[in-house]
View 1 (cartoon, helix red, strand yellow):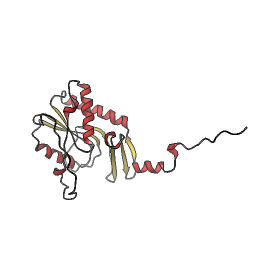
View 2: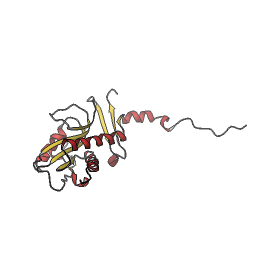
View 3: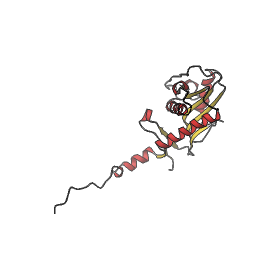
View 4: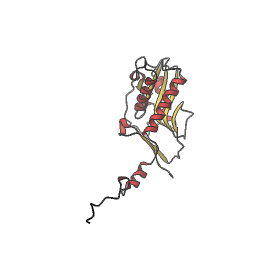
Length: 205
């Protein structure tokens, strides 16, 4: 009997070059569902620590801190339906407050957008994707000082990779991720990158 059509044996994941592509992208340490669960946990922790969402402001640090702040606000509003998620969120550009402007003088200045009511006497939660040296957060604290006087400032990050250069600690962490200085932590979010993932590239991994 004549044989049927040849069936390809290589699946897409087995194609030459895929392993090299994966190595270049790095090892995945947080998948999309895991990112979602981490943000859900952080949202509950924020509400628990602050005894609800009254007087809460989430300021996302661009670029990826802003969509994370919006997601957190949506999850907080799911728990407390009386809250307006959009009214909780603002963006905080820290470009002009950075201590490395002399090294990168051509940085693009972004937008600072504070929710209605400002920050005075409110609980401000700074939101960023990765906490590393702490210098971006120091710049964010300086920027907040020019906006007003919050009752308290807290910090939420998706990933804390260590190697702090300043005495700054996150109040809410999605994942503590020990890294070497030669490694890169790559956060990708659907709003910006078309997918959700956190990967580590470089180093000895």
